[in-house]
Amino acid sequence: MPLTHHRQQLRALANPERAAVSQRYFKTGPGQYGEGDNFLGLSLPQIRALVQKTDDLTEANLLTLLRSKWHEERLLALLILVRRFEKSKQDEKTQAHIVDLYLANTKWINNWDLVDTSAPYILGKWLLTRDRAILKKLALSQSLWEQRIAVLATQVFIRAGEFGDTIRLCESFLTHPHDLMHKACGWMLREVGKRDVAVLHAFLGKHTAQMPRTMLRYAIEKLSEAERKFYIRK
Image (tube, rainbow, N blue to C red):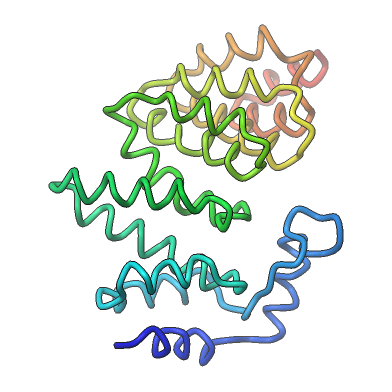
C-alpha cells in the first residue's frame, strides 16, 4: 500500500482534544523543549497497532515519516524501525544499516517518548556485544536528544548485568542543566539498583551531594523509606 494509505489511517484516528493535551504534555510552547511540535492526537497503543501493517513501506517512505512535522508520524517510523531491527536479528548487515539510519536522523528523534521507545531497542541492542564509543560521542553532543539516546541505550546493558556505561554517563551528566536528563539518569540508576543495589549505593555515596534533586528522587524510588530519607537529608 502507498504511504498515503498509512497516513490516512493515522488521520482517521486523529483526536483534536487529545492533540491539544499532547501539545501541553510534551511542552511545545515557545522556549520549551518540544517547541513547535505538531500532534494529530493518537495514543501509543493506537500507533503500535498500525506497525504490523507497514511491511510494504520502503526506506524512502520511512524517512518521509521520520522527518514529518507530525509527532505521531515520527513515532510510527521509529516503531517500524524497531520492529525491522528485531526481525533482522540474524542479519547483521541489515541491523547495521538500521543503526546507521537511526544515528543519521537523530535530528527528528526530538522528544523524550521518541527516544525512549527506540534508543534501547535499536542502538542499545546493537551495542550490547559491540564497541560503545558512539555513546561518548552522543553524550558530548550539544543535542539534548542525542544525550538522552546515549543514556537510554544503556538500559539494555543494565538488563544484561552491565552497569559501567550507565554509571559513567550519569556521572558526566551530574551538572546537566535539563530536567529531562536528570529524569533519564535517575531512571537508569534506579534500574541499576533493582539489579545490584550495592552499585547504586556506591554511586549515591559518592555523588548524592552533587545530584540534581530530580535525579536523586528517581534513583532512590525503590529503596526503603529509611534509605530514601537518609539520601534526601544528605
